Length: 173
Image (cartoon, rainbow, N blue to C red; front, top):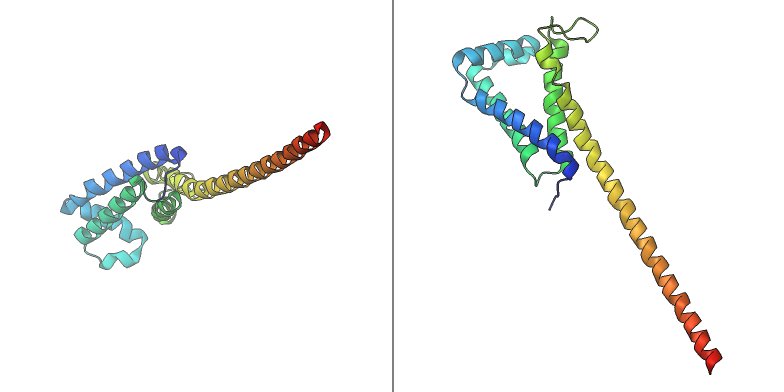
C-alpha cells in the first residue's frame, strides 16, 4: 500500500484538479474547439495533421483526465504521479518552445506565449514529486538505521548494567 507524503498533497490536489477539470471541459468540446486546438497542435507537431480534430480532442481530453486522476489518487506513488505530470508538462512546453511567436527567442514569453509558458510550474511540481519521493525514502532509511543503532546501544547498556549488578551482588556475598 502506497502512502502519500503529506507534503505532496497540496501540489497533487491543486495540479490534479486543474488538469482533470481541463480534460473534462475538453471532453465535451465542440467542432470549433476541436479544430482550434488540433490546428495549434498540428502546426507544431506535423504528425498530428492526419488525426481527425474531434478524435484528437477526445484523445487529449482522455490524457488530461488520466493525468489529473493519477495525481488525485492517493494510492498512486509520488514518483509515478510526478512522472506522469512531468511527461504531460514536457509536451506542453514543447508546444511553447517549437511554436513561432510564443517567445522572443530568448525564451521570454510573448503575450501569445504566456498562457503556455506558465505551465512550467507543472514541470517543476512533477519533478519535485519524482525527486521528493526519493528523498522520503532516504529519510526513512536513515530513520531505520538510527532506530537500529539505538536498539543496539540499549542492548549494550542493558548488558553492561547486568554486569554491574552481578558484580555488586558478588561483592555483597
